[in-house]
Image (cartoon, rainbow, N blue to C red; front, side, top):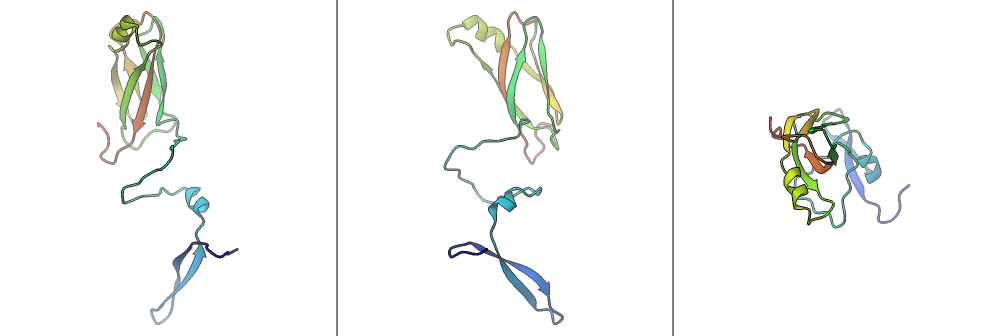
Length: 144
């Protein structure tokens, strides 16, 4: 299955009885690498020239505090290894609704853990408030 221009990668097949290394080449199959259950670790800066889409629904979403309630709990489908860094922002129906903005910005992030978090208002919501949120795992363990 080789063609001119294919990228090959060398690998060690076996060690000989005298200690010599016997190596072979195989065709680089990026799809096989990406579908592996092992994580890919990049050790240098990475540049993406086009849009990036993350399929992990635990990384971002929309949480709505419904009218006459004061909080919304967000549970991750798969818990993170440690508490992720979580950010959120109020989504507004119109930029000119100053009362909506003032009320909706009174929210606080509470109960952050590897399993989820809560967005909490200081009083019952007089209307629905929706928030975009992002959760990113960092090697230092987030905010624990």
